[in-house]
Image (cartoon, rainbow, N blue to C red):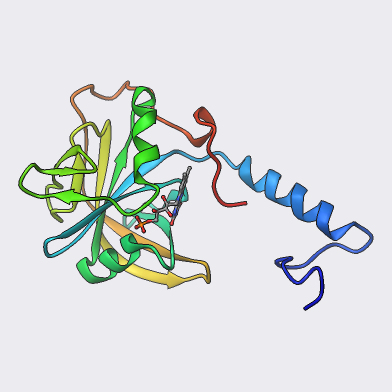
Length: 182
Ligand SMILES: Cc1cc2nc3c(=O)[nH]c(=O)nc-3n(C[C@H](O)[C@H](O)[C@H](O)COP(=O)(O)O)c2cc1C
C-alpha cells in the first residue's frame, strides 16, 4: 500500500497531499450545522443518535435529509421502521448530545433512553425526547447509499415546538467542542 493510500478523493496538482487533506478536513468542519438527536424505532427496538449532517431538501413535498453512518444501529432501525424523528435541541441542553454518540440503552418501562425521557412521536411513534425544543416527524421517503453514509430522505408528517415555544436558542455544532465529518 502506498503511504498516501488513506487520502480520499482528488488532490489538486502542486500541493502537498497530506497538508491538503488536513486543510480540506478543517474547511469541511466549518460548514455550519445544527446538532440534533435522531430517534428511530423498529417494533420495540428504539435508538437515539447525535447527528449533525441534517438539512431540508425540498419544500414541495416537504423533505428533510439526515445522513447516517452505514454501520449505525439508527440506520438499521430507520430502514426497518421506515421512519425517523428529528429532535431539535436547545443550546442549554448541549450536554445531552454527548450521551448519544453510541447506541443507547432503552428502558421502555421507564420511557427512557440512556436515562433521557421520551414519548412516541405523534405519527411515526419514534422516540422523541421530552426536552426537544422542536421536532420534525418523518416517514422515510428514500434512502441513498453514499458510501460511508446513507442519506435518509424523510417526508415531514408532523412538526411542532416544545414547551419553550418558538424562540428557544437552538444548538449548533459550533456551540460545542465536538466536530464531525471533514
Ligand atoms: C458532533 C457529532 C455529530 C455527529 N453527526 C453524525 C451524523 O450526522 N451522522 C451519523 O451517522 N453519525 C453522526 N455522529 C456519530 C453518531 O452519533 C454515532 O456514531 C452514533 O453512535 C452512531 O449511531 P448508532 O447509535 O445508531 O449506532 C455524530 C457524532 C458527534 C459527536
